Image (cartoon, rainbow, N blue to C red):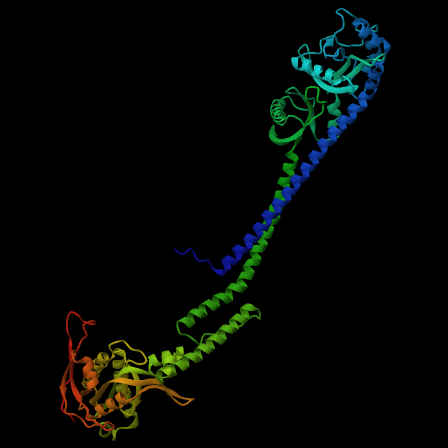
Length: 616
């Protein structure tokens, strides 16, 4: 089944709209993709900047403490106390030497709070706590806590690993992050582990551990410079002063799952935090020997989404304006195309119906104008050809004319088995000698029209008119396989038609017909300037002679025709005729009737009886 048919104008408008929509969609996609990439680069750069800032601030804040720790572990008193396991002296010396740096303000709140940590571990990483009841310092108010720093088994294992890593030529200092619980409070401690060596023989004695809250005011400082809120992830928890408590559980769960999948390194997640999408960054900060610690930051994509929405609205608004403009332009352009095209379609249909006088105005010099001019030239040519065809049909049989128009090579001359009849009017000269010329012409035109139609009805070709004689050919230029039978039936029908016409005509006309069958030469003959399709040969001459001996309303056939139709005709043999142009006598037959062929009427044999008449 064929689909719906759309006009050229609709197709042009639809194509224009499709182009506009496609370009708009592609532009919107590219712009949003570039904006997304730009926001992603910005967020990545801000996160990297924050991590670098955090590291820089940490290094700047810790430089004095690290130097002081390095000086302390080189102290002979510390090494001797550690060697003699004099923990009371060891802690008194450590507290006194570090009290100043632990109380100083380095961009965070005062470090003189009980959350500060000073401990010593042995070479196996085991904590060597201060003796019970020992004052933490000769100076009161130093605020150094005495709680055990090993809150979990993971911490014990981590410090054992750190102590082992410091053996031999290992690093003199390491920085890490640990979780510490003080009462009901949990916090992240930033710790500096400094190796203690007995200088006499470079014997590794243990390490000094100094710690303090890692997120004590640092985040607020960094959040002033970026749009990223951050925290520190340690052991499945995120500690942050800028992240809302309601946001932490979801972020912590997602980050913990991602860290455990990746193991180490960094990563980026995209998730909904609250009602807006966010990017979540995480990057490892601690040395490998400590518990894994990650810097976690979230970056809101709400602004990026708002920017994309604004961009989308602007692009769509512009596209709407462009679409309206394109619609108007396409309607205008399509009108300039569709109007002449519709006119061409209408004119073409008129030509199909035979109106070759149709002409179209040429309004432009573009391709449509050239097409219109070509159409006018074509219709003029068709009009001339139709005139030629009409004239050709008048001077030649329609079948012959058709093959001439088609350029059939068989019209050049060939031998054909044909049947040819001649039919002329009996007593024509006496009948018309006193008639006005116009009446003679009218009489003959009516007669020839009727006889011609009978010939056509029986698949014959009218070869020519000569005076009052009509010549019909069957089997050339086209054979129907039963040409002789068609010719015989045509002879009977011509006499019947003439008798019917005589009943109403003012002037009765009687005809005589001669019919002969056999081989003849058929083709176009004449001069270079004028040709006529005809047949020539003995059978043609014989048919003309038989026509001359036929009586009024009588048909005479030759032996060849009789042999072809003897099972389907009723005849009466005539005495042998001495015919001009033939040396031997000719056997002829008067045609009395013709029966139908079995193929054309198998259920009955219809007999057409020729009128009986005596020779005139």
